[in-house]
Image: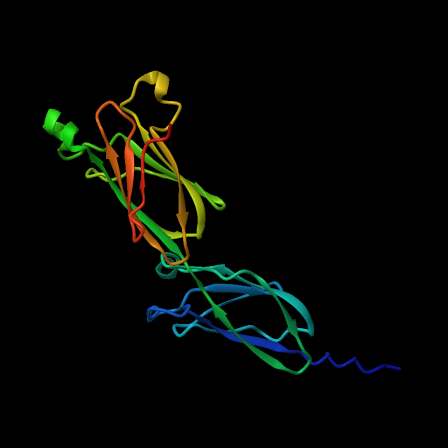
Length: 219
């Protein structure tokens, strides 16, 4: 005798949409974000909508795996969450991105240095400097442009240590940065700062923010 095969258990489904947090209008194109659920991956469309294939009832981990470049500069993925799929039901979720922080700045010579050595302020004067930012799960080192400018986007809010390194220092001092300070970045904040390099001393760092914080060299 041949017995009939059991019918597959009714499945459930998850759909949803990716949105910007409250505030300024988000981008026009939300396509390219990759999400995973139960070993399956889908991608958002231009309007931020996504739809997973039907799944067996149960609990699954939903995660935004990757943001496209045009979103990654301004936003961070939300934290992973557990989603319960129910038999015969379609569940719809709205996922809100986290606003990223941004840090930018410029290295400059002090007026005294420029007056004593005008050539120091010329083009290419800052090619020997390196800016390092170390913080929540990341360490970034980059060279400023020839005018001393630098910019870092898509940063996770939190406490960071900002360090400035220079090649043109005595060999005995090259193991340590010429400046090292903590920087606190809030979600969605753009902090612009100015690194001033006086002649023969550690640099002073001036924060250009609403609080007008001014920090001197480390003692």
